[in-house]
Image 1 (cartoon, rainbow, N blue to C red):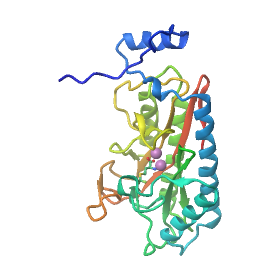
Image 2: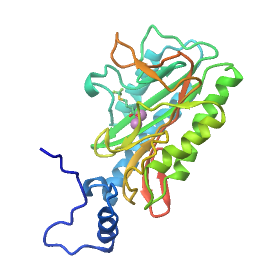
Image 3: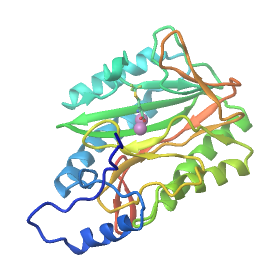
Image 4: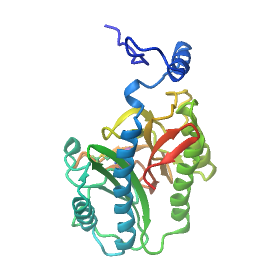
Length: 284
Ligand code: MF3
Ligand code: CO
Ligand code: CO
């Protein structure tokens, strides 16, 4: 049986608005457009924004606490306690069986590192902490890099470049343009420094669930991808590698994503809402 492509549908008995007509026209040209459910209501955006405020406060709190000698298990407890005190829920815990409250990814670990009491932060490490908060059913997802002590210049450059890639991705994401422009701009920037972009993991729609459509690739797929429409909520979260873009998943835990050549990787992530003027950050 042929799979039916999901598309933009005007509810029966209602007249199409100018917004509907604009999307229908683009859809008729054969472009991928969002479904109606991907366009958040102002109420939903407000809910995601409030989840984002707590998510940001968690990462700010970690900036104060993270230091050499701390374990990633301690970071996990800080995230869990802060979230609970603010009446929110840590989305990663039990998500598809994930065993902790956040992801902590050191050096060659690209993402989905599992916090552990046996894992200490050392001088020169780079650490990504990825936090996702649920408040009143709404999700906000963001991550930052933390440089532990004195980091080598080339590694520091990787961290800075990954952050620039996020900023460049934000600028490239324009309403009534396409998702594909994001990855194209990011890959161009990463390559300028001789770095590569991870392809096996992507940004994603979010807000009403942890992971929604669309897929936000961070490399140049040479495809247009989905139309970006005001009201869509999604993440951009480029993972930039010092060496090869290839990654593998640790067989022992089934989660930890590691660079194939075991050279370092850096990532920054925000959750956004698309507006008529471009992206607004909901995890600032
Ligand atoms: N927060 C990650 C993301 O940016 C997803 C983590 S899934 C988990 O999409 F189960 F590992 F927490
Ligand atoms: Co994400
Ligand atoms: Co995340």
